[in-house]
Image (cartoon, rainbow, N blue to C red):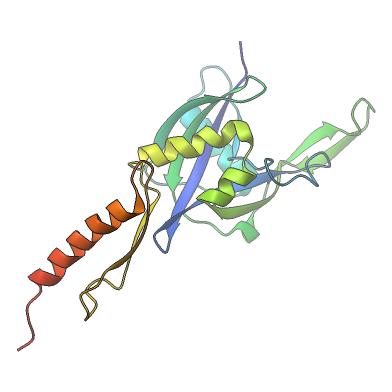
Length: 202
């Protein structure tokens, strides 16, 4: 039976854009690896243990932060090595510079018989969607896609200068399956309606 893990992807909105919280594994093997090396906080859980409880526990153990809020079930993905990862997402915020990870023993160098202690996570960071796709383990990329799907398929919609004196609308949009011009027209129709409904001066 494949090993089972549970993980938690924290997300936030900054200037109407989605950012994801990822962690970098500790230890000498990962020390010089960056692209394709980051992960959602996760860990294995025992048979009979509630996977969401395990995901919340692992998040705290690896980061020192407590995740609270409405947890979105993202389903289960299969990593390259065959491990099954049950993933959830939660909107929240935390300061990566305040990260405090637990320690775990490993044999290093491999087959040396020598044991060393390393932090499970040596750093964390907030990334834009594009950056997160580059940093995260390739086999965990589906977690990002599943989150976007749960959020309604919309990565971001930013409205700038709605209701300007010249009546023009500028919008920066990104939504899978819809063109920017189509979304700009939709946003402008909305903001034009808002402007038209405002009381006139005098």
